Length: 227
Ligand SMILES: *Cc1c(COP(=O)(O)O)cnc(C)c1O
Image 1 (cartoon, protein in one colour):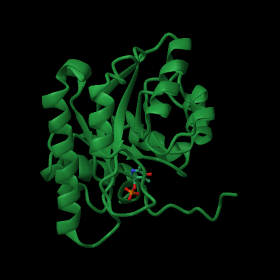
Image 2: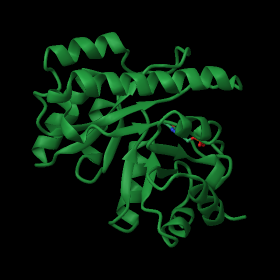
Image 3: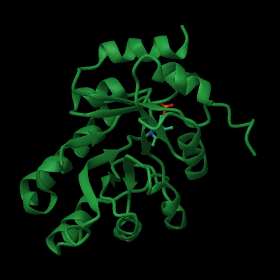
Image 4: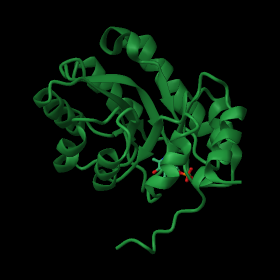
């Protein structure tokens, strides 16, 4: 099977309401175009330079998602065109995205990245931090970002019960925010980005609305070819 066929296979298995975000990092424009040609419009990248380059080369109706950690000094390069930022992991980053978005007269859709995995390498908010920020109305001051929901990454493990527990935790935090801070997040807060190649089936069971899938569509990534 080629990547377009694998994409179509996964698309068929997912509920229609779930967005299949094709994670194209390290993959060439030709691979992206073969998915584009069968109707895929949502692509995810984690490096600003690569994202910007692909945006310039490829059709302008592609919805580009920034999924990886974002450095504040690089925000300005993606703000003119990025469709959604999944990796808002601090209030400082949110404020900086807001500032750059204001300069471009845009309101940018963002997800709050939650730290649910028991790995130190993963970043994100914990629930207590968010409660404090919401109760101080920190997010509603940011008029040029629109909070669309949350994003989570499970621990890299074969323990499916652990993964399920973490995804249910993401869903619980999402529900909590929606129930308690409706005035701040508004009706737009409706997205849960969770699930990758190895665990997207569990994520969908736990309420995911966006799955981010790379290697199962495009094949393993080869990082040795890069600098
Ligand atoms: C690379 C990446 C993915 C996709 O991972 P696969 O296991 O290849 O599907 C999903 N989310 C984030 C944040 C990533 O960096």
